[in-house]
Image (cartoon, rainbow, N blue to C red):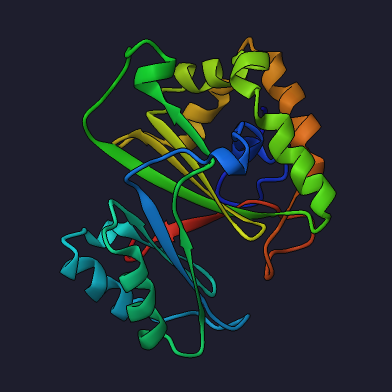
Length: 232
């Protein structure tokens, strides 16, 4: 991938194109989860209630992310259903979604031979939609079911870029992607390494781009959006 601007549009659809999910029916297990509050279009939500819930759950403020009318709490969440109810009460005019059991997990320890593991991570959150066509949604999941076997260059690219973990969740047709990188590192600087001397990554991106589109509120041609840590 070249000339990619992570803080704006994600028009090459990199990360989820790099995703390689297993079929939804065989969702992987992970202790990580996310809860999302979605407000009316054009209304930026007050993060205070979510920050309070994060604190009560012994999660740092950096666990709360925001993009326009979306708030997301991500981390080692316990009692997700209870969190969903509490957020529904705190944000009565909004919808609340949960993201559990990711359909795709890239684990550095497993995929990179344990090399380059670090203790402290920064998490980068992105979201997009699958296209509305159910047949294409199935194709997307089915096509990616054997990615580790048939497109090993993609996970090799993650290893080269020092990615520690990637989790991809799906609720309805909305996708939530979490990229974990070494603390203090820049995704803008790391990401080009995924396709360095690795053209199959670009092939994968081009192949998968037809399956994804932006969530409501994105600009024309904008697909992936980044949720920013509240307070940053």
